[in-house]
Image (tube, rainbow, N blue to C red; front, side, top):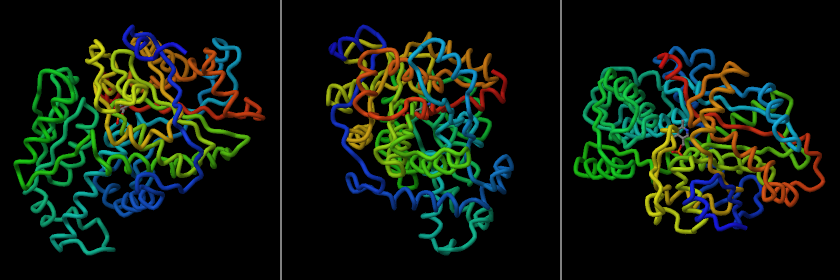
Amino acid sequence: MKNIIDELKKRNEVLWINPNRIYTEPGFELHEKKFIHVKAASNRLLRFMPYIENIFPETAPRKGIIESDLLKLSFMEDYIKEKHENFRGKLLLKDDGHLPIAGSVKARGGIYEVLKFAEELAIKEGILKPGQDHLVMQERQFRELFGKYCIQVGSTGNLGLSIGIMAAALGFRVKVHMSVEAKEWKKALLRSKGVEVLEYPGDYSQAVAKGRQLSKADPFSYFVDDENSEDLFMGYATAAFRVKVQLYKMGITVNERNPLFVYIPCGVGGAPGGITFGLKQVFGNNVHCFFAEPTEAPCFTLGMSSDKADKISVYDIGLSGKTVADGLAVGRPSGLVCKMMKPLVSGSVTVSDKKMLEYKQLCMDKEKLYLEPSATAGFNVIEMLFGSAQGQKYLDENIKDVDRNSIIHLVWATGGGLAEKLDI
Ligand SMILES: *Cc1c(COP(=O)(O)O)cnc(C)c1O
């Protein structure tokens, strides 16, 4: 096998297979995190349903559940079959770009963390009783309490949108720390909601570090820490329960003969890591999760393949971290996520900006589906799995005695909804 780090340096697309993955049964425990933690997060979101439905009418069709559709992509499936003659299986897409409220996968983790903070604060202050209908959280005394607090976050864009929109709606003050390269429309949208947007030259980790430091100095400030947050992680993980039901409704049961392959775009790792943890809790060894990153910002692949986790950044190997996939423009992965993924993730791939833009166009032309470039990264895992000797080896070793036509391929499309709505 070629040296992965040399390939990353050359900006070549790579497939990294995780040598440390272990056999997992549903309901396992890992670093003190287990099934009940995902369940508790899911229950908290259920408690907020009436409140969410009331303040975000777009969530009414699902009664206040923030969820996206699971779609069949038959035209893209045909396209990939033409391109790679040994590709087999059904192609599905998780349409998180059309998650309500924030239009990206961040609506799972980000909104969850804000709601958890608000609920715990209200209970601590005695204005919310355990078990009480959360609709009361619209009342003035709640807004007055939340208004004393400031929620801060470092963001490449989408996390800021999800935290900003939710926290501002609850009545919190919000500060979002962004690198100057974040999209202008995202900053403008946040400012229109009364959010303070602070911009920093340099990379994403610096914006996060600045936010963390400013927040620490203020006892009425709460910092959503994209690089270390367990709440974000569990918020993302709840997706697994929903996917299981959605697959079931499509007549699909995941088991040894019908394995599920999931391809998720990766920035700092929280979203794909949380989703993977949840899916593994639900499907155990029958789900295979791969991450996808830009060739200029392959921080997870670098951290995992070098075993240096968050102690190495893409700048250390001469890459720029600059990519059209702004949701993935991250130079250093989350240490927490690297630790959690070591025994779980199947592998990761990198993808060029050019290919993400091609996939964006293909999804528009063939499926009438609007995605942002970041959201398309997962498609390249399929190409790398079915188009390389190493990918074939993974399939041969891991899905023995399985008719490959029974594989379910799920591309996790993570963003684009708000850009589409604003027509930019
Ligand atoms: C943030 C983001 C991701 C990746 O999530 P991380 O938690 O940073 O790994 C993927 N796609 C989009 C569109 C995003 O905004």
